[in-house]
Amino acid sequence: DQQVKQNSPSLSVQEGRISILNCDYTNSMFDYFLWYKKYPAEGPTFLISISSIKDKNEDGRFTVFLNKSAKHLSLHIVPSQPGDSAVYFCAASVAGNMLTFGGGTRLMVKP
Amino acid sequence: ETGVTQTPRHLVMGMTNKKSLKCEQHLGHNAMYWYKQSAKKPLELMFVYSLEERVENNSVPSRFSPECPNSSHLFLHLHTLQPEDSALYLCASSQDRRLSEKLFFGSGTQLSVL
Image (tube, rainbow over all chains, first blue to last red; front, side):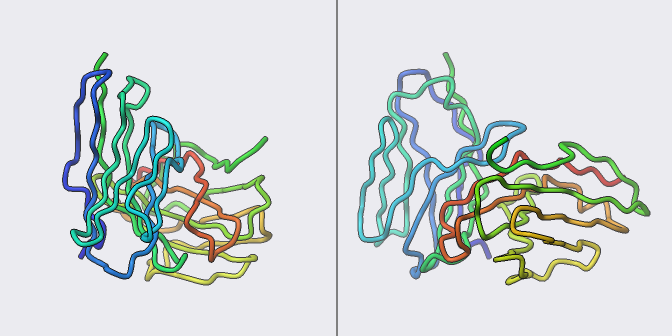
């Protein structure tokens, strides 16, 4: 059973608009959450993270929101740019141990 | 050269072949990992090495054999694979195994087993 799920395999957004990528988890022990971005023919690269003691973390155009009661996190990209087109993975860990990844969401930002 | 580099980038092999995947990290990290990414599935952790010692093996079939000769190099030896083993194999490293939140990935080896 997957502990981290990304239920939308793909998302298409117009350039300049907001992209919202969602992730749900089942393990209430997760205390650290991350988003990775992956371009074709490249490995995933770290994008942004959030600790369970926070509900929001912002880095430029990227903001991650954490709703612990709903076991849900989301990544907001504002404004979206064509270069943001990639596969986005959410991941979670317990006490700095091994990451558990979601299945990924392919974001396509149309010019 | 910096970061995590993997060779080869692509590999096609028959079920009776023996091949090896290579990973090298130039970040001074102490932990290295092999992940498998199959189509439409989450990244699956296969092996973890910390300071050249294997610390985790997530029930991976014995046809996959890792080797970590030093903290900068990691190999994945492959033999008698099955077509369902076709996937993207990603190597990653982190400063320390207990700081595994932030992983640095290589570009991966796209493996096709015929």
